[in-house]
Length: 270
Image 1 (cartoon, rainbow, N blue to C red):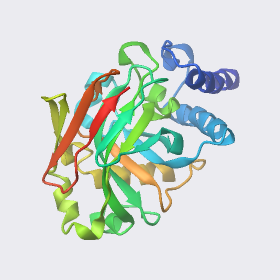
Image 2 (cartoon, helix red, strand yellow; image 1 turned 120 degrees about the vertical axis):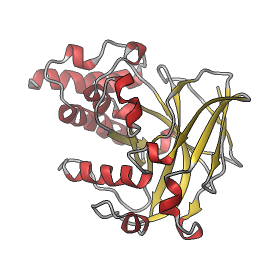
Image 3 (tube, rainbow, N blue to C red; image 1 turned 45 degrees about the horizontal axis):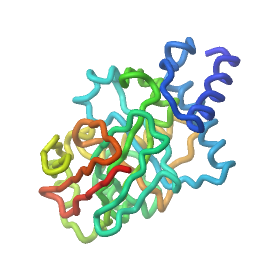
């Protein structure tokens, strides 16, 4: 990707997040855009936000649900930053979520982890759990600046993995859930709009397990020399268990779990 085009994309990302709107896909206008170039452009947006006083809180992983890849035209997961300014902690499992500034927002029920130490590379569930302090129900509100959610994986990598908001429920300590690694796979979440069931999903939808999604993120970060490794205190949201569904102001959505002792969440969109 030519240097001038890369600089133009990095500048557009910053401007687009300050003046949100739909634009044609980056990949259609910046020849040679690859996921690697997208991540590099996203680092400019991240640096700009940090310079403006934003504080990083963790990472989100996107497109870990492989059943959705054909629908969105992608073939691999990706990651982005979450921030103090984009994170909402739910009080007693109920929260108001502002949608202002988000473009084509959609809701994604997920399972997240709060790290107590830097997790090791590898796919050993117990080794990964040893680096996790808490498991938590998260709901991500993703967004897309491209019409009708028509994207490539490179578009998503550039646009901070489509992150908009992250709602964080009540955490549970890992040592309070015996056999957690096994429970994560069959755990089922139900997503409702009002009182109507919209979707259901299982933990195994997320690259086989939310722990394996975490392992994926660790490997990807290790392959990106300019990406900060995971650290203690970070919240990691591992990807949507269901499909992503459009949300609008005035709507009420809720989640509930079976097979995992996590409380559901009720979200009122404003």
